[in-house]
Length: 322
Length: 290
Image (cartoon, rainbow over all chains, first blue to last red):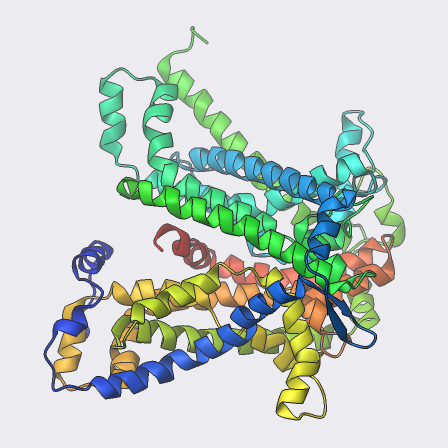
């Protein structure tokens, strides 16, 4: 057991060359029944909780989206597609969809572009770069609720840090969180600040995995810095960029705590994204479980489409994996 | 530019790179420093322009006031209980399930794997409402309990006890273990329980620790579900309790609010400072290797 210090390379070779079901072909004294019993015992805790708190509620959510549920006498009434018709015809929901798109695209661009730029910088031989990486990564660990409060203080139009920085260059600070046109950019800034370190670290790992001889070859062909970036770096990073794209999009679809703390979805619904809408319909003043369920299912459908696209695309990209 | 020698160009480039790196690190660090600075300011100092970064007479009393205005001691206890219980349950569920899916013979084992992966695609938001209703009345009627499970530890923890992600991650790790060692254990007559304890877990330690870390950070920072399922300060974790302090104090008493925020953020920052390389590698390895 002590001699099992195989290098990661060995492990990968073993994993890919041994088929999953290798245990099947080994003739044994037939401990099948014992394996079966153990399989059921081992699977039980995870499957029990998954069924009770994930699969079953997901199915229940579908049913609820076709019902009107009254909390007063806990009666339910089938209403067909009424909930869907209501939310899709309601101007608020259309704004919510636009907000979600705005938030997702803004966060995605900010996180990926800045993340890649930081990774390119830290990929150079600089002293203290590990320290810088640690500082840049730190916000990723922190509670969204807590940092939302810190940023509310920073965005404060009179006493906040940003107002003071803008004051140095004689620009008046907008009332970030109370203006419909400024609230979403503020939320996006916070979200990018929190997640850019994660993206940069992943990009950096990807950059360091690119074989050096590819750059040498490009150099010999006379490619300049920009052309080497276009023809070597970007294509070699494409699987990792794709992974970050999908995780960032799915993350923004589920972002809640920062909005909840900083804007409560306002002003005038300008920062209400899909998740926040689900929460408000279900647990806010409206307390309309049927509509919340319909909105949640819409969210799920959107995420499913993205996941399917990911699977499709990643199948075509397997050969990139170094 | 053209008049510079290559050597000079290199020096200029290096200086620019260092300056950019310092600037970025500063921009990322400033909000955290601003929080610490604000937490030591008096009401008047908050409104001083230009701002004092290091307050002349630090107001440690802000921390005392924050600690007393909402029960932070209780919040800490709740967060610690939720984090330990939640992480332990996810580890048990995930390890057992990953082992079964990797090494135990069973018909349609692949089908079970697909079922676990399907759970990965169901977002928490879609299950929150039904789970809330379930913990409210259904659980009481089913088990003949006196009380429902809203505002209880089991209500906060159990819906997050299973893990599809952890199962997937650790199964990847288990499948990558060298086969000959596992076969040798089998030859020695080791049963599955012993193989799991003495061979698989020690060898797959990095991936198990990685998952434990991801799970613990998620549980410590979890917000939406604990907020929905708790309704008294007795049961609220730090993240939720803090936002209640924020709502109660309004957006003016920044000194006290920043002190309260520091209670939530600083413990994680201290742990991070001592184990940053380990934590960064752990939290990103799920992405780069999985």
